[in-house]
Length: 280
Image (cartoon, rainbow, N blue to C red; front, side):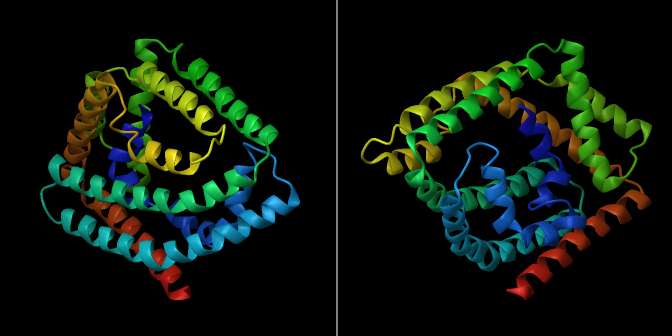
């Protein structure tokens, strides 16, 4: 359940778009980047590629005018949080707001994804599913063969890398907080991969494109969290709380240098967002 490590650190809560140094560069080129990314999974012909770019335009316009200001408001909450003693509950609130923003984007993005799905041939659909299943095998080979020691070392590294992007080098006590957190985590890779395999089966069935498949896909995405197994939800919640506690402890122990770096990163992202909004 690697998303726990990525999404629960403050670094990920702040990043919302991309790395601060390249936010505007990447965002302004999403009409090129998204088709390129899609073609990693399915080969589009020239007509389909052009159609995808056209379908993206209203989505990107919506995101720039409606969502970017919401990100600025979220940054206000982050800055207010950093002036106080940080609690895991406060971090969870910001995380939920960030997830809500992601879900809004995902829901709106379904318009062009479904539009693209309606244009794909059966051969292209099969190619897409095959790519997803190949990725599943890669994940299984990468994650399931790890020993317990390797699993916890990877968890520790994820926490360290994400946080040091925003705080700089952590001291010995801060590193020990993350080391302890990694030891408390429940192993989740096998659970996550089982859930992913179930979703792939469901998706393959939906993409047979029987009449009404578009709404079935929307409903499946909306209800996917409720369809998770109890084991998955309990493991995710346990690991999330462990990580939130650790991140809060590290933030509360940051020194002046780390604090300056963190505020600088927040300010850089704010300036990028303001520039993107102003361009519109």
